[in-house]
Image (cartoon, rainbow, N blue to C red):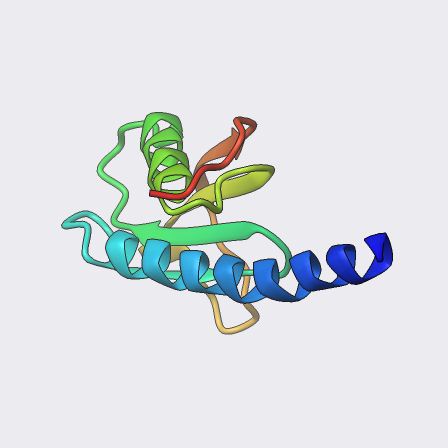
Amino acid sequence: MAFGLVTLICVVSAPLALAGQQSALTEIINEPKVISAAWLSGKRLIASVFDDGWPRRGYAAFLCNVLHLHGVGADATAIVIDARSVTKSGRYRTLGTAYCNFPSRRR
């Protein structure tokens, strides 16, 4: 019986996580500073902004808070990159990174 319960929890939590990732991504894309954003493999969020010379570690931490509010912040990483630095080969210049090391919760 315990095995069935564990299986049910895994099956139900996967769609919830995907829904949380999508709703967080939608909110982040609507941020005025964000040019574009996407989930990379695993729990890595990348958001491109225009580099104005200021460090973006704090903005990456803000993105972690958005992820947390949508229930997908646990063990996620928020990466802020320079929108002008993205090359055709997929390389980019990182402006700030935050490791979202707090427990996640649903709103």
